[in-house]
Length: 97
Image (cartoon, rainbow, N blue to C red):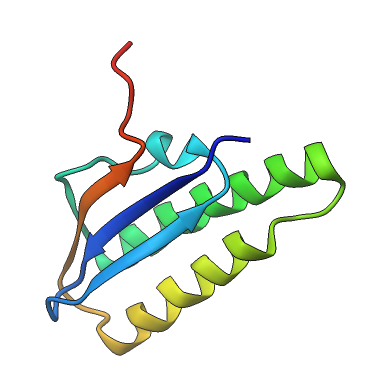
C-alpha cells in the first residue's frame, strides 16, 4: 500500500511531519494551501480515517499509525486553536491527471 508523509506549518511556526498509510490525503489537502485550524483538523481526520479504513479492508485491522498521526494533529490543534495551518509538502507529491 503506498504511503505518504505531509508536512504542515502551524500558527506558532511549528513544522509537523505526519504519516499516512495511503495517498488518499491528496484528496483532502492541497500543498501550498492554508486552512483554518478547525478546517484542517476536519480534513486531516477525514483523510486519515479513510486511509486507516483502507488498511482495514486490506489487512483486517485499522492502521494504528494513522490513528497516532490524527491524535498528534488534534493535540497540536488544542494548543493553538486559532490561525492557519499551511500544507508545506507531501511526499510523494500528487500526480497530475
